[in-house]
Length: 205
Image (tube, rainbow, N blue to C red; front, side, top):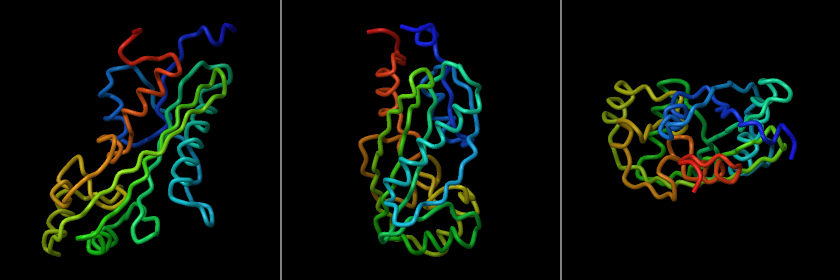
């Protein structure tokens, strides 16, 4: 086994998202943050799952490329794509677009693909997964939409509802194998990937 493989790897989060950083902090392990710089535009004809997985891998590889050649690191990339009526929906960016998203989705089901990649710079191996969360929205009023948006301004959130905050009041049900996936970083899948890479969160068994 090479010296590179014997070197304890750094853990890198390839994201500028404060939500993903907060989730990773739950595991109480040291990590650094490196912001990837990639084009997140979906490809023509690409499925939501394929978009999310491709971008999670691209983010991890891009961040790995920024920490220098020969660095031993496990790099976490993640991306989330929401789908409604067969179309991908992104971050609204503005109050008006968020209002329109929430109007369209009330009483309806929305599917969130939260993709995860763990890239090992020592070997070039990349583990990846797509965690699907199905969300049913309540039949709320326009006045309730307005009150929510003024309170939480979720304009950087795909689907315009932060389930980890006041947005939970807009939801009727959440179905997922991983409760952290909807927030943006599937920790159940991640801890399994880290163990596979020789980095068990709770130490050796």
